[in-house]
Image (cartoon, rainbow, N blue to C red; front, side, top):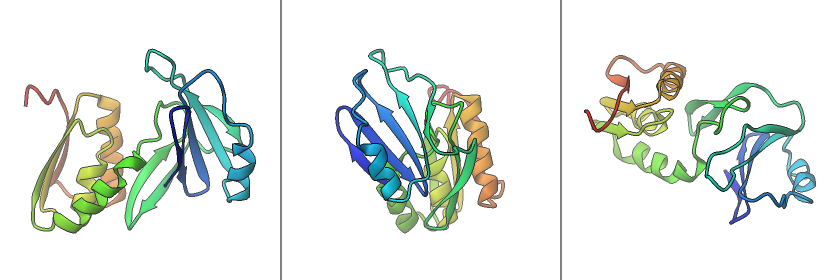
Length: 168
């Protein structure tokens, strides 16, 4: 769930782990660490998105941060990567979209363009979508989507393709 979001900072919670994104060199995290720990967060990373929009690598902020772990969102599993990545792999601001897909995709086919780690197609597939196709230009993202598909025991009716959506 998203805990904080404003022009300086976003804090996303994945179980006992927090991903903190800073949007300015000025670090507004004083006091936030104590509140997160008080709320049961045991470890966190923080990452700075600089003015060019390109993030730095995340750094351990506190706790024993795992390299990765499995998150469960309403029965659908996703691999969350905490280190050596620019994003943990699951956009929490897309949660309502995933919920809508779970409620409305039974018996449907879904085309997921710019699919990143496949969360939209995987949410649809775990709720009864009969066929999905996810396309992303990034090979690492496509491979990560395949990991997420395997976590949810999806069959070959759910494809994850490395490719340029404009060519498709």
